[in-house]
Length: 77
View 1 (cartoon, rainbow, N blue to C red):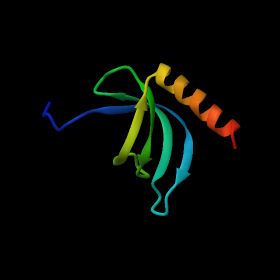
View 2 (cartoon, rainbow, N blue to C red):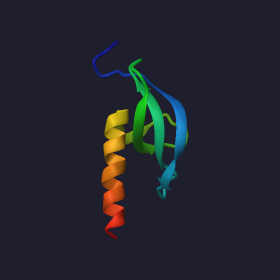
View 3 (tube, one colour):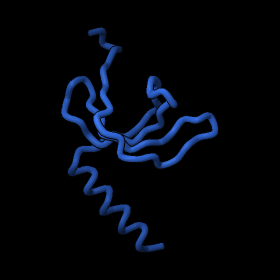
View 4 (cartoon, one colour):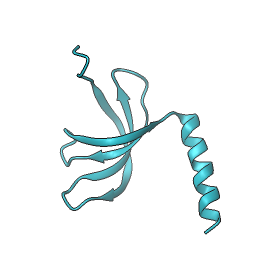
């Protein structure tokens, strides 16, 4: 495998967070990168899932910490 190549598999689509004017959707999915264990992944995807934007991949512990931070933030509003 070339250093610039990578493989991914969307193993579970959890939901759409938003959609841009060109049809790309910001999605929360479970994604396996290069054959590793699937993790939570938030990024924009083209309609055919062949292209993607930059995103954030989180382990389960990181996702729990993010939920706690968001809950605290939203409780202050």
